[in-house]
Amino acid sequence: MPSAKVLESKKQIVADLTERLKNSIAGVIVKYEGISVEKDTALRAELRKAGVEYTVIKNTLTKRACENVGYDALVNDLEGMTAVATSASDPVVAAKILKKYADTIDTFEIKSGFVDGGVIDAAGVNELATLPSKEQLIGKIMGSIQSSLYSLAYVLQAIVDKENGGSDTAA
Image (cartoon, rainbow, N blue to C red):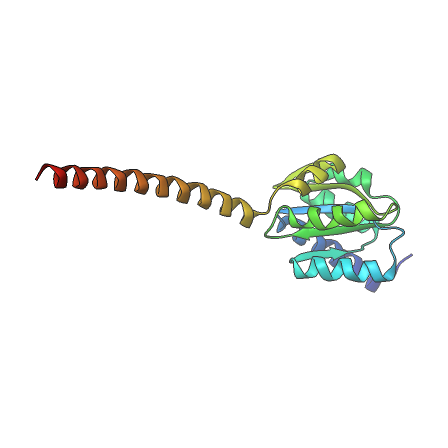
């Protein structure tokens, strides 16, 4: 039987992970197998740079945290060597980075994830990874708005030029 100290430590890990899942806009669960130390170090550095928290936690503790948050559907994917990546600000960054590694390492596999409070399967995570980032979407919207404004300005300027040109020839 585990000691009170070990039990308290496990409860704290579950509480911390529960809070992390609640505060995350998106997350991904991966099969963490067959990745070399070199690639693992590069993966963790890339995730950290992007603001993604990536940890390997015992499946039983992760299951309890998922159940606490209401992500019961994720529990079925918590078998074998798994890792959890969560992002508090960008819904696509974790999926993009992990998909890149899953595509190059045969044994590293995306299992499932969540976004905006809903659970998604591996196909959903892969689809999420193909979406542009929030910054790219904002840039596209701003470009569209700016393009429309430029078009309006050119049309108005053409009208002004035409009116000015027409009055010069009549005088």
